[in-house]
Image (cartoon, rainbow, N blue to C red; front, side, top):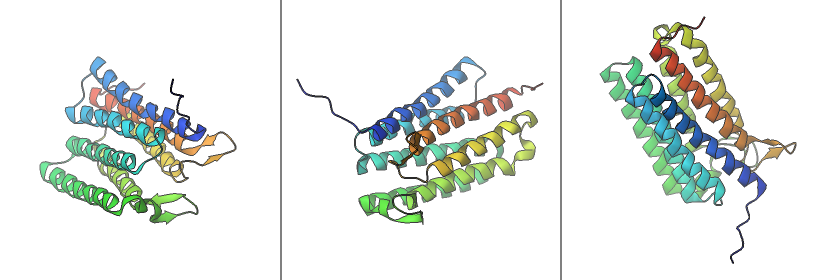
Length: 226
């Protein structure tokens, strides 16, 4: 009988919490199907949340290989691009939708191509290096730019956003800003025995996706909060 493969505690923690990403996407889709329908572009985004979690489990659970890293990066780019498409579809005209989404897709594809061509060495080239393995790589920087673009697209149309849903938009931005700082430390870094930053980031992100769903539910249903 083959003995079970052992996995170090930090990798196990990162792997298990990555399931929170998958489950948050599943929950968003189930809640949409059980309540008021949302535009299909948002259902596509919720589906991409699930797709993003799968290579994350693969990456942390099977030794953080380069192939898994490429899969994780590709799905993160896809997730944020569909996020941009959803917001553009809500607030912007066709010309702006094509220009912004086309430029974003080109940048994401170039960044992914760079990662593949540079190979594992890409993880040693930092845009923001904070010592050791802490900081952001070039591919991470593009993810941050994608997220900032989403926030900008929302905030530029703030006057058109349903008033009672605005606090949830601000909360969502705060949640993902928290994720920004949690993503700085190396995957393996744990402080004070319990602060596993990567694992906490996975859970914070999952709660952020569910909060985003609530924001969408309120504005699409025009529910008045009393």
